[in-house]
Image (cartoon, rainbow, N blue to C red):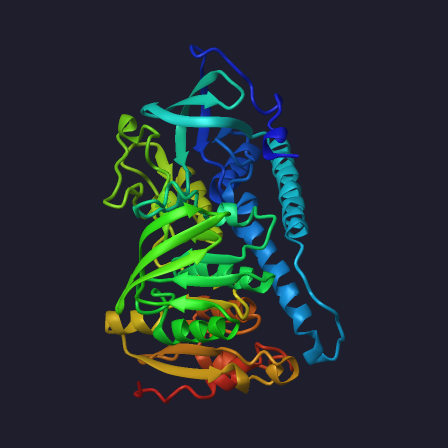
Length: 482
């Protein structure tokens, strides 16, 4: 069953173009923040419509967050099966059935679609499958996927159109039919040699996954290290972990041309510090960043301004330059995480009702779902230095966390930044098993503005990864040190 099979006439109604329909709110795009806003308003008795061109629940449950983590988990299981002898389990040859990996992922997607359709039905919000475009202030023209069109007007319109994978202008790259994260999650075979352009979050997650499925993997990164937005020690440790698993990493290497077809055979010509190098592979994945989906949706017709990077300009209240029009999620420049979009929903829903909630000073964590995972909240070491903010640093190798003596998960480290002017935690990074769960405990302490000693001296259950927080915080330098 495909996503299109779910868009029945109960949800999509064809009407004459002259039939202008009025709503209390219309949300353009069904991403996390938008759909939650629609359900919330509809349950409160508002007449609400969501216009979505392709994915019933937005990209997160269909082609991004949840499907990717589903596939990453399958890759981790394959990796553990190959390592079973280390732990006393005897196994035979381990092979990956990518058809089954894909089926398992799609089964989850189908469940999510059903849950979303039920939420629309139960809330009373209307889901309209089609492509929306502004044709004036607070007015959208929608070309329906099933044919026909509708014109929708609303007191409030919310732009929630997200972003898409950027494809760099490299000769031959468009003809090569390259993979983005979407197509990479649809493969029903293990690529013989997967070449990946980019060394950021998506690139690293998928590089490790496909290496564990059995692919030869090469990462091509123009910069001097992986994960350029992270502290140097984070990028270096991830580099070491990936190389240990057999991933080839080419730093200071830029792709200059592409030949062939991804899925058959591709050749990537690169420029390195030592000259030209040609890479031959079976598949090519591009993961070099994101572009907001703000083109060709008529924003100029509604007086909605974009910034220099084509994101919708918004205030801290998420208001656009047009009265009654809001923007949330990635297209509004919010951090590219589902949980940030959900918080955007809270901001807009409160402000629509006369509140004054903003996105200033919010504490947004994130997790990279490698194995081990990387989790971070607050300031990085580099950001503190750039801001000239004095901090005290403590760092603990994961090998010093007692839990790892039982699990052998000794890669990585914990790192904490403590304000030099008081004892509050201002940043935390962990590259290690269960990093996201441990980070959440630190985030809670930061939200409560607790002194670090409260967490240091807490009685944390033994034998857990979080227990390492006590050992980490015990090494914080005294106040006045940096």
